[in-house]
Length: 467
Image 1 (tube, helix red, strand yellow):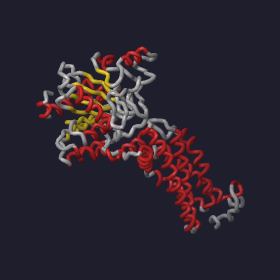
Image 2: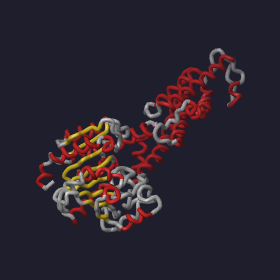
Image 3: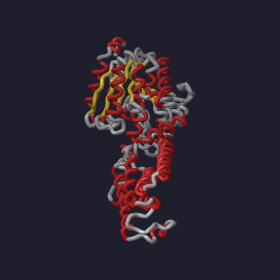
Image 4: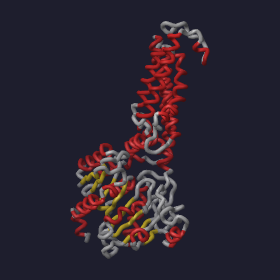
């Protein structure tokens, strides 16, 4: 069908597709190219963190297609997609404002081009009044594009989740940082001295040291390493003890920053979860299998120290881990949970948007699905919004940062608090104004101490145990 005001398009592709067109028709094609390029560039540079980006790409393509008036011109989207990245660079927008990941962003732009092309074909089909099969084919092409992104992002994301390695470069100990005596659990303490003497010392470690032995073993056979730090007050080993669990890509050295808030009154155990620090394993499961690591440490505590009361504190994934274990382990009597997500899906949707400027959906769906297929475990089964409701009468303190963009207040703190309240769990929530994910003791140290002290002082069972 002819573009209004032009000669018929000739058959063929490339330059042959525009031979015989009038000046007006050529201007319309040029305008369609500009619309596609400008729309895709603006979207890619500023709004790909929204899941609505997929519909925006379709809309951009449809407008360009209506302007072009010919489905044969759909290939105009190809040069537009190629030019998006340099156009964003000229505008000073990389598409990845926090953590550069150009390969993922480039893949998204390519997939966005496919979805835009699908919209273009639909718009052109409407202009030609030949919607039928053209529109159906275009929709299928768009779905293929979205599915392609799902497969790519799901693999990359699940790989990051499951095969995540400790990113914390330090391996200092309670003695080197605070001058505290400690007991190395399930590894030779002489290895700490070896790390200190290595190039880089304890501030820039080439590794986290020799792996854990067989004295503390999780249910699936992995060796778990930890530190036992006696209370500064000189309390006996049977005194109340708190287990501290690190977050994703972290280890017991990183959570040393929490120890001073408890050290004077409590014996402490700082644990390396699987695939972190000295503990065994090569796969993380965001709290699902890590529950066994906490259980192994609690078993060791009861076997060797006989504490009168056990509490737990965790940061981020570590918070979800101790909560998940406590839901089925009544030995853990109280919980302090810092920067904890509510749902694995929401956490990675928010993370994809805030850290990578990528659409949260279907990215998070793909990550969750591929993580399940590759690990064989259903990570959302231990979503904190579920497990917190199983605590019964055991008290919980939730601490969250108002500027947490990974696990936002609305998607994390509020749902967890509401779930606990609905189940009758004694729950308190405190907000660190301006605090970011996992950095609350850095932003609000005095408040953090006051919140923890007030929470622990209100536990009658702890007083009875000598806390």
